Image (cartoon, rainbow, N blue to C red; front, side, top):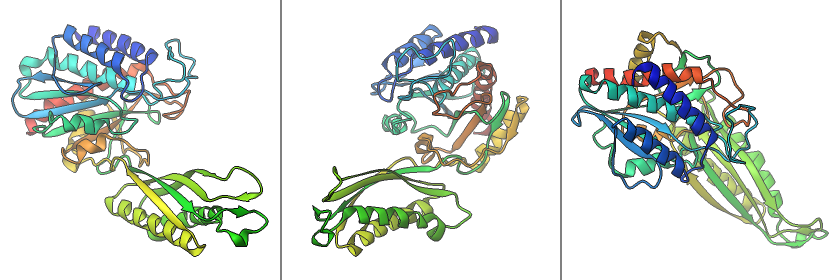
Length: 377
């Protein structure tokens, strides 16, 4: 395929992927479609123990090794975009642009295959499942396929930028993501006689207020971070003080030090507030992905390639959303780039949409990153 044919192909595939979103670890038809697309282009798909998602390979089969990564899952959101290629599945939508990511890296695969004789190394093309779970990145890492990879690049749609603009910065682009739950245990009693029991609702309410002091009083004011309590349940009627109160929330940080400190303080406050009212707290912590970490050298390289490609580069904004591309970056240096896909409602909004005009520039940019990275290695 020539470049014009590749652009038409990936645009058509983008429409198909958008119409057929699948949730995390359920991307069966998406994976099948990708296998067929890659096979038709004579691109090798590696035999890996992945139930959904895949890794393909282009190049010499020898070092150096570069990886390009996209994610393939959708979200449990009812689409309200009004697009004529909107989701055909009720309650499911590509509301984060993963359909765009798939089509971009597929285009990069086609472009690299067309230039395969000119490649001086091997490019792994990762079509990763379950970024939204999150954790699909770890499933890919566990296969061992990336052990020799020396640099990795990923992309994400951005409704903040026009087509032709990229957001790139060194260091953290997205935050670490942790979840926690706390059960405050007290002693139930009649609401008319609180002195005969131990009220877990008061414990929970006191903790919610105290937890909001962590970022403002225990973390450097110059470090973006947050603690959000998002869900509280307790009791079942108006005249009974219940036995327990349960809540859950999330912590977002850009540094490992802040992440550790906030976790410590949440444990201290939950246990301390419960004890101060005569009860106790049971806390469970669910560690998610760390913050992304664009290494300075590969960030500079990504900017240089973008400018040489005629793209505009702006410093990526600090974002406390999460991204499991960070799991790759714990072991492999590289860069995570925001791709302008036209102004739109935010990611994860039912009206979110991208401009397909961004597909061609993004695919060529990602392919060029891989090809020119060989010279640096």
